[in-house]
Image (cartoon, rainbow, N blue to C red; front, side, top):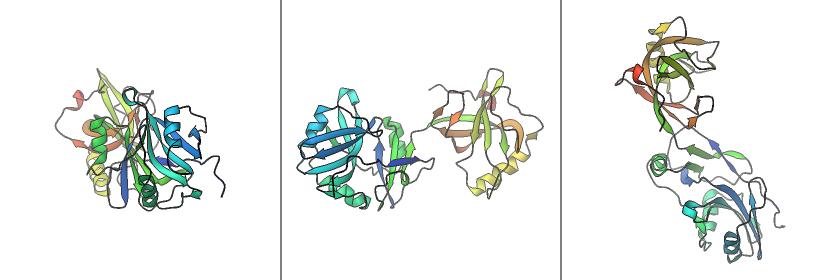
Length: 286
């Protein structure tokens, strides 16, 4: 089998779920440049995920000195506090063998057998009960969940899931949409915040519910229904299957960031709050 010129990197699928379990391992998600490293004897090539050459003599030298004939590594390069690091989290080829079909645990064992020295760093597994909370506390970009027993796939795969760190804020419910398909209760909450005298539409929340909560919220919201949208500012209000309610219910919402259009990106419901006046809910800036 000939040494590969290129290996398409595996990509993680974004998830809004937060979970742990024996079928998954968890790793820190680094905020850097994806780097695929090819070692063929003393020749080392470093390529980005878009197949663009990357120049880093310290990393290339450290890989060239590894005691294997040929090798393909996958990882992320960062420069924390001006300290170069190549965080290696997978291996696709070693000593004439394509190992992408091996289970994740066997590939990790192969990585463990390599004497990685700075600036090469092995990405460790996380044993925290809630690794995403550690990510938030320590200012990481997020967490990657990897399914045990899975191969290395050359695509965006459901076997790797990325949990990005969330912001959180309170928002006021001003409406909801009808459920579709097999969903019950409601489709999404329509939420906003107050900006002086304006009630600003901030987007839809369609995840974070179970069946019981969907039915409970629909029953409560039906008693609050009004004829017209309470929102006075903002674009993108749904025009069909929408119901409007008095802005009295406060939702605690987790989300990745605000978009340039002032909407929530990837929001999910964290809970319903009853300890604050809706008029005090504003857009938080930090």
